[in-house]
Length: 80
Image (tube, rainbow, N blue to C red; front, side, top):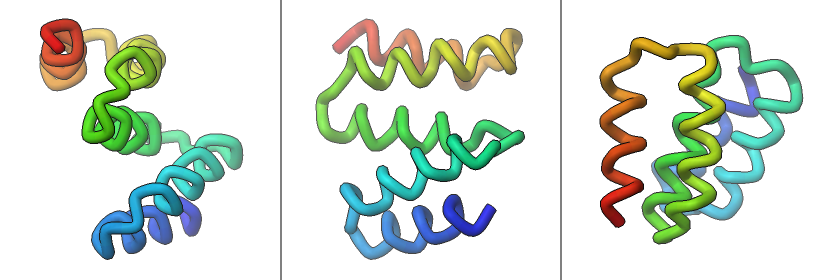
């Protein structure tokens, strides 16, 4: 949880590269909510890394298969 929160603080301060690292660390440490996957997907999308964003979203869809938000974001990535 600490890594995720630090990632959010860094992202709010426009330090996306550092935030990305903390979100990855949060996943490695067992982010049970999988919010780190969503944040990684958003950061990749922001950097026009659509394939990487899709990888994160597809992992997220395994945990939330009926999520309209996840499915919508996957669609948006496919459009780009």
